[in-house]
Amino acid sequence: MDQGQSQEQSHEQSREQGKGGDREYVSAMLTVAAPTERVFAVLANPATHASIDGTGWVQKPVDRASLSEVGQIFRMAMYHPNHPNGDYQVANKVHVFDAPRAIGWLTGEEKEDGRLTFGGWFWRYDLVPLGPAETEVTLTYDWTEVPPSIREYLEFPMFGPDHLSNSLRHLADLAGSG
Image (tube, rainbow, N blue to C red; front, side, top):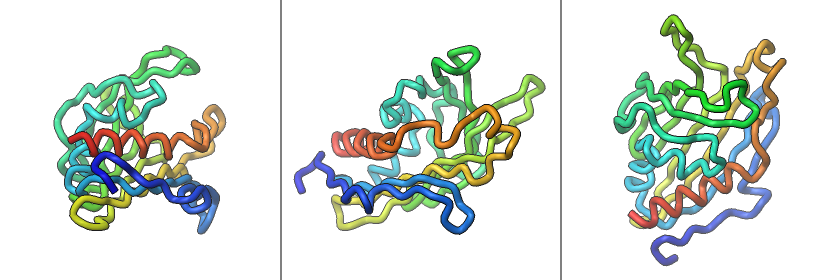
């Protein structure tokens, strides 16, 4: 595969959704034509997250430091037309950090008193090197732990079925151009 190209697995293999084993999640997989370390570096940089997302919801990082450890908090400026304020901010907490194999974060908010609360959903990227210049990336969005009080006003998943595949293609473009 040439640098910058990626290979998406077949539809049945690339997307999995359901309540398997009491988990509620959706996942997608893509083979990226870039070394695992480069793909991980893109994911660990909050400044790239808006470009990876591609929905327009993720606007820009509030905290620009690279992700480097479990427990690290990073905030992102967001926009969603159905949010009461349109513009808002999320606080993310790194809960998986295994460079260069896996990275993930819980999404929540900072309350007016400074307390951080997390809604029960997370994003996780698992990276498997397929050689010196190829990486299999699996993106999982899991909302298993979302409590009923949040489910009353938010529907999960919050996006269409192609969102994760599109995000992985954006990641492949960013990692392949590095």
